[in-house]
Length: 159
Ligand SMILES: Cc1cc2nc3c(=O)[nH]c(=O)nc-3n(C[C@H](O)[C@H](O)[C@H](O)COP(=O)(O)O)c2cc1C
Image (tube, rainbow, N blue to C red):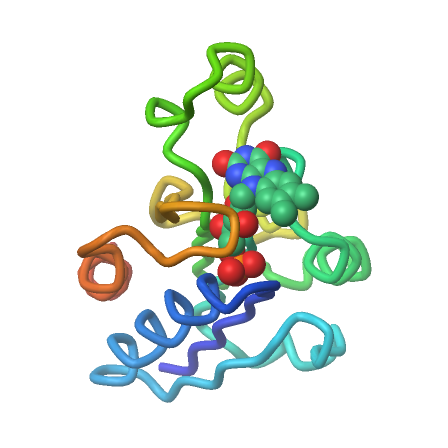
């Protein structure tokens, strides 16, 4: 199986999650990991599994991820298993009620990534997943790297 993990990261937290996922997938797949701004859409052919992740910034993925997803031609991911993740605040822990409301109702990057991957033919094998940071620049909440590794195993187990 050929797998590709694509991510973006401003402060390094999403990169850590992406690396944990790639490492876990590596037990059963040939895995390549690339930053979104290094990817050309041609690299998305001939793969069996594509995992895309981004920090959530203003309820959506970064420009690099959004731009890449927009450049993928229709049907490119037909027959390819896809999964999406993001990093985000835990809205329940935000001090301001207004901000809590905004973050919750605004949504997160992973769902938008998943929708776009499906739009170009991808077969979404797991619901979009979010991993939590303590604060804007991190660190990741305790246990999130391990949860990402387990999530990747569940990708491999998915039918
Ligand atoms: C400009 C900006 C906008 C953000 N918007 C959101 C948001 O809408 N929802 C959320 O949960 N977190 C938001 N965050 C927190 C980021 O998700 C957090 O910085 C990110 O997970 C860190 O990942 P990185 O280290 O890979 O960049 C925002 C952070 C910044 C700096």
